[in-house]
Image (cartoon, rainbow, N blue to C red; front, top):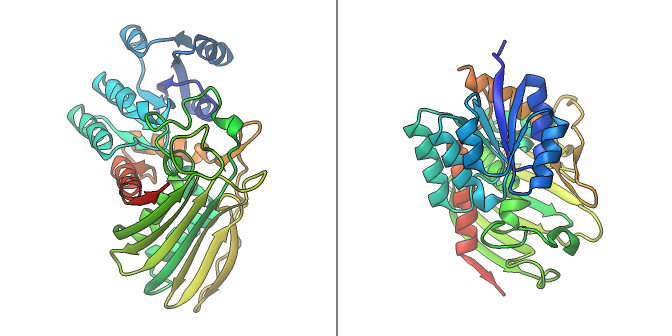
Length: 337
């Protein structure tokens, strides 16, 4: 059994609640920190912890924190993670790991220099159909992979961006970072590295509230020879529509779909049939919009295995860097208006 770890939560926004729920099961929340005093005070009261409004103050006074959960805006992940690593803490960072490859590499180097572990939240890896697809790919059940298609059709209304860091290049980075980095992670996790990219982006409905695209189409040529596409948008009318991956191979075709990669929609595989899978968990609910599947219980189970020195399936810092690298390449080559 894992020993009880002391945690701090940096950033008390909506996703921090998912972390707090799991930390209470496996350890203790020693402190929470947010520049918004009201948010910090509310979370501290709810989870009987100490509220701080400045990360340096928290680190000065709290001496029994083993792990920091970084839940701040995307563009602050590197700064906050590096600060915690240099103060002798392990770090679990919400996605995306960072919004530049340089920042992501700096995070990894800080972990290495201070002999600490750095994990990145990639909860969609734990969706039962995705876990099964990874097994199929690892065992080469589909044979040579020819092509693939990834669709991400979600809805983010203008209200989502009002009075927020969201939508800014400096703190958000783009919808591939904030909404769809999980899909880029799965692209790399399932199919390997990317050789060539062509991309186009447009902002159709959010010109007055975001500084980047709200829709994009990407063509990939993979190192393994497969070709494929990614179509992503936050303009699905009224609600999230689909999050899907289709893979066509020498010995079979498979599609995982639903709104959040949570449904096995199609399989036809030579001499193999996917067994009955456990039911996927519900999505993260945030009031007037929904996010990815809520698998933070698995994230923390594997985090603790990793901290205790055992085998685990947590997304590594290296995997997190590859996600950022691929997104950076997409944006660098994107033809946008």
